[in-house]
Length: 100
Figure 1 (tube, rainbow, N blue to C red):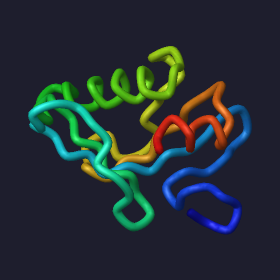
Figure 2 (cartoon, helix red, strand yellow):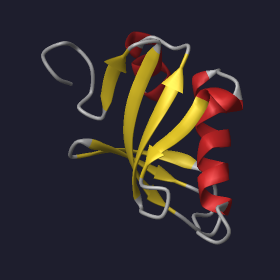
Figure 3 (cartoon, rainbow, N blue to C red):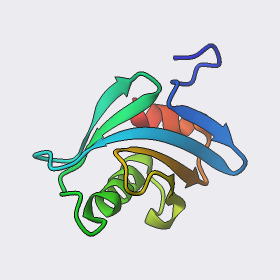
């Protein structure tokens, strides 16, 4: 955790949070993998084909964070394993608890 109490992959922004992740597609099931430097490792049970992994990532994180699927938006890295997501309607503290 950083001095502000938030993990390094989570940042508060206006109206929500920014989350930096490293996606590992084709896992046996979707799950959090823990901190990996300044990113959160997320294993996704979908292949990186036709945006399947991106969709599963957004659905999984929405469920985990207790927000609507539309609140989770990939803002950077759609074609990369390293992604930045914006999650609307959630405080950094709520997100940190849900991802712990």
